[in-house]
Amino acid sequence: MNSVLVPMRATNERVQMNHAQKDTRFIVYSGVAGLSSGLLTSYASASHILGNAGSLFLPGIIFGLAIAVWLRLCSCLCSIWKMIIFMAGCVVASYLSIAAALLVHLHLTLRLDAFRTRTSPIAPETYFAGGFTGACLILLTTLFLTEPHRSLGDTLMGALAGALVGGGLGVAAEEASSVLYGSYGHMLPYLARAGGADAVLIIFWETGMALVLAFTLFACSNLNRNSQN
Image (tube, rainbow, N blue to C red):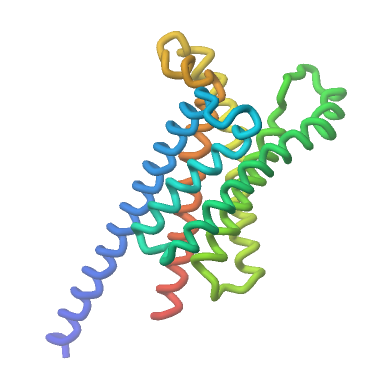
C-alpha cells in the first residue's frame, strides 16, 4: 500500500510545485507588462500624440493593449473578440476614472477643504475615486471574460474588493510621485521629459493595477482547482 501512496504523493507535490512556479511567473510578468504600459503611456502622454482630448483615452488604450496581449499569451483571453472587449473596457475605464476624479474634486473636495487645516489643489479622495473607478471597470471586464461561470454576486464582490486596492493605489501613486519627483526630479531627467509627477503616478498605478488583476485571476484559479479536487 505504501509503495503506491509514496509515488502518488510525490506526483502531487510536483504538480503543486509546477502550479506555484507558473503562478509566480504569471504575477511577476503581469507586473512587467503593467510597468511597460506605464512607461509607454507616460511617454506618449508627454508627446501629445492624440491631443488633449485623446489623452483621456490614451492610458486605457495602451494599458488595455499591453495586458490583453499578455493575457492572450497566457491563454486567459482565448479569442480576438475577448481581447477587443477587454481593451474597450480599459478605454472606458480610463475615461470614467478621470470623470469620477473630477466629479469628486468638484463636489466633495471643495466641501471637505472647509474642515482641513491645509488644503491642496487635488486631495487624496480625488485620486481614490479615480483609482477605484478605473480598477472596478477593468476587473469587472476581466472577470466577465475569464470567469463567465461565476455568479454575478461573486463577480461584483471580486471586482469591488480589487477596486478598493485600486483606489488605494491612486492615493499611494500620488504620494509616491510627489516624494520622488520633489526629491529626485533633478536626478531623473526622464520624468521631467515625460510629464513630471504625472509620469510617476501613471507608471505606479498601471504597474500596481496589473498586479491586482494578476492576483485576482490567481485567486480565481485557486478556487477552481480546489473545487475540482
